[in-house]
Length: 430
Ligand code: IMP
Image 1: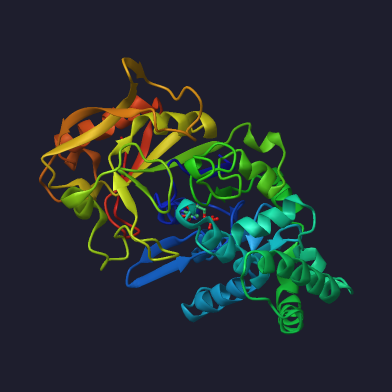
Image 2 (image 1 turned 180 degrees about the vertical axis):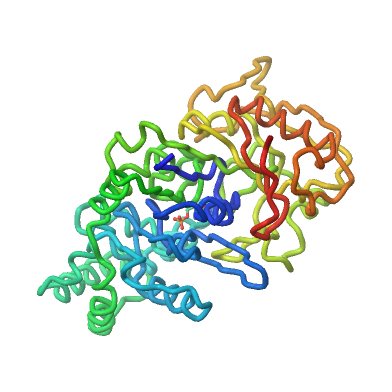
């Protein structure tokens, strides 16, 4: 299948990085289509742990060309920092295998300052953003005053950047936040213009050509379905199109690319979210602590980008079915099954209850989930450590039954299950 989209089926942090890494072994291109360095994709290869925020995680495979699509917002400082980090880890990074869309938007320190000031202003109603300037950068894009990669080369770029900072200062002033000095930023971005220029390309045309030539393009979604600007738990969402169809606009591909697409939804064996917003199956107390982990392992439930403890809960089948529909998922990958080992009972939310009504589907999208209480199905847990299992038939019967029930609820097959952070800790479905 030449075009595959890997997308988070929950609120992000489903473990997409390592799943992309798995599929990227067979890919020619690995492309990100949304968001910026708010994402945190972790890939563990032996002793080495790669934490990528901006560059597609497929880059770790030497045959892959990594693409940052037009749907992204890019912090140039972070971009160069990640290139350096990869080179230090002996991952070859050259302009030939790292391509940056000319139409991707720039994130500047003004966007980061605005992100922080707007969150502070919201107070108790804050969204809990990652503070990376994502929302303000997309705001500038939507209000048509954003600066794009192509603009870096323009003769008047410095003047336009200075103007953007002056404009941001007006808002910062109203928000009671400190002013920014445009002059050092203009000098700093002049240097970025020089360093970024070899990577900037018409990635839409390149990907189109690649697909026509029968190459495999793996689109890597950041965040998750429920954080989508249109379809997520608005307003507690990010500012981009996270869902699989966003891969087309975010990479500049036509509908033809989607015709035969493989759309892989990554779903954690339980549910997590960072930041504020509704979470019907949320757990608290000892069980929550148990699922979250102690924070000493990279796979514990603490944000890769912000280090914040994640909220945790039981898997929500209603929201999963919603994700199947919104993305047009063709298959599922279930991650972190190993974390559930040792539980007596595992609860799975199969429907919502509102008064006397039982609902299998969301009546009005996920923005307001407050009227609903989860309806749980209790399944027996398993005691065995499954982290060493590599064959489906070696999984405990109870684990197989839990996975079967997830597949049944989703209405699509499970292709792969991960049982640990290591590259090889996966169990293909029969
Ligand atoms: P922003 O994308 O920084 O504006 O944050 C908006 C919301 O999306 C917040 O609730 C963040 O915690 C959440 N968010 C953004 N990126 C990620 C991610 O990669 N994983 C999980 N949550 C994220």
